[in-house]
Image (cartoon, rainbow, N blue to C red; front, top):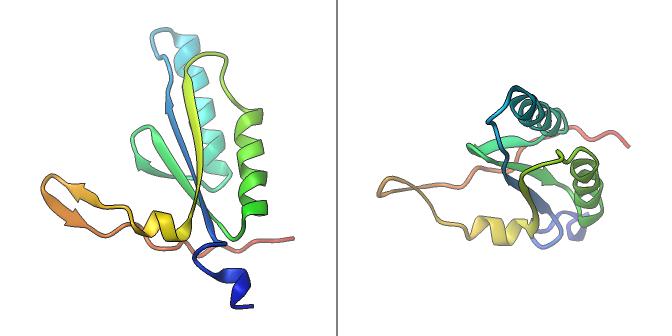
Length: 111
């Protein structure tokens, strides 16, 4: 069990995007994309960056595939998968104040 849940096996999926919002159609695509990734368990980290905690690389790949299926026609989207260990080494600041990275999100996963 310990090996299954170590900091090198647990993953974080980061989705960052810059989508156009000039027209009503583009704003709708932006809203739908954002809503769908949130329904898949992603939470806002910054305005155009969402994160999701995953229990394994295999689980992370499932969520990465889901994001790829809903990509809007326009815009720039990046999907990054990192280990919990790497995520924990991130330095986060609010202005000049150093703050803690978000903790592991407790999620119920059904298989």
